[in-house]
Image 1 (cartoon, helix red, strand yellow):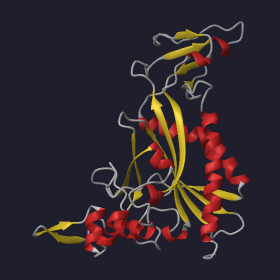
Image 2 (spheres, one colour):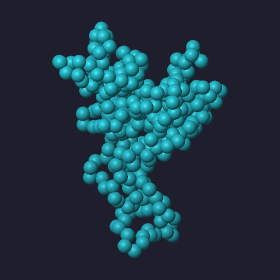
Image 3 (cartoon, one colour):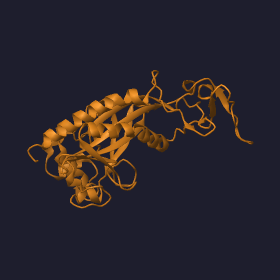
Image 4 (cartoon, helix red, strand yellow):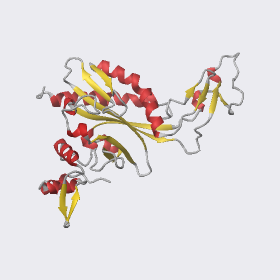
Amino acid sequence: MIVSKEKYKLDFKRALETFTKKLQQYVSTETGEWSVKGFIDVYKNIYTISSDTKIISKILEIHIFPQIVQFTEQIGYNIILAAQQNYYPDMTFVSKQDERIKFAVDLKTTYRKENGIASFTLGSHGRYFKERNKQKNIQFPYNCYLGHYCLGIIYTRADSDVSETEIYNVRELQKEYETSIRKEGEREITIVNNLKSITSVIRDFDFFVAEKWKIASDRQGSGNTANIGCSLNLEDLKNENGIFSKLGEKWFDEYWMNFGSATMLKNGKTIKITKLKDFLEFKGRMDLLDKIIKKY
């Protein structure tokens, strides 16, 4: 299997990239809006979705999951979801022909910012990342995976004047003899002719597939938690043009295994190493500094 590792990785990534190209049409209307408009109750009232990123991420995940299941069948894999909320990865793909062939895939969603930079985290650099033969907060030991991938979804938020608390009743959902029904004390309901009349909370999707180490930053992504950061524009994400991309996965692994624990003497003071440039200097590899892809 060692000889074929790169081929397995190449085939899997190509299949995943082909799959993601179909997702944009699946989640969008012809005008680019999200085809999900809200939640529906038994009275056929539509409740609009909050723009909270956690809520949107979860609904997007639910929305595309049937397509993911179909995809795994088509390529001859089984899918295992994270056993617990804080487990890595979101999805484990296991070959039906050889259970030793496993791929980790995390689903990442974020919205476009004014500066064009998408920011999210790429999993922990803590215990399971360092102790790669152990199974702590990870579905299978880290070393069991042939590759670690990010399936990313980037979207644009709707204009700020779009209400998150609207209730709609849609005429096209009603039969001729039905009328709008509301309970006593219920908020005002807006009547619209069809579902497309409701403005979606997000729009203009972009999907990408990237190997985790190729888009990683050399900085943590969420304050004091041990998460690997990522801050890139869309083109760099699609082209896997992160700070480690020319150095290689070995340097990504070694850097993040030692992040914040290795120390060096700099300007007469002992500091913790939290920058890739310092780490290469610490390792005596100043010859590799020109391979650092400088980012934002």
